[in-house]
Image (cartoon, rainbow, N blue to C red):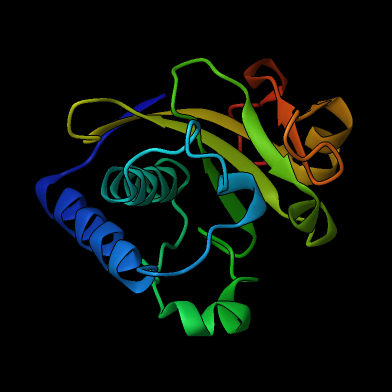
Length: 163
């Protein structure tokens, strides 16, 4: 399903993305973001991710807090879901590409939702669907950079309803 953000939604999601980028300045990257060849410019990545979260909330009628915090407080808040009471939004950078699922999401019994933010401005987002993290983990292929902690799940495993 394609979701187009209203002006105010786009404005708020972009603001949240910028605040997240500023909060992370000089922070080390997690293992799954360590490879510069796979990373996108932080400003673009954070805005696109926040737009995906806003679109997922809109698509499924779930609460989105638009949260951000200082990197020093990450340990206190990293358990919070992206959307609703337990939904992790996973942005895919290429349309149709598989999405990442990580073991902490499985342990937290989160629901995974994959979304793609369209260039050039990320205002239109394709929400592919959802799946429980434990099911996604079982159906996924290990990543080459973190085979024990990150797997990739095909979009064909998703359902259009919230899992």
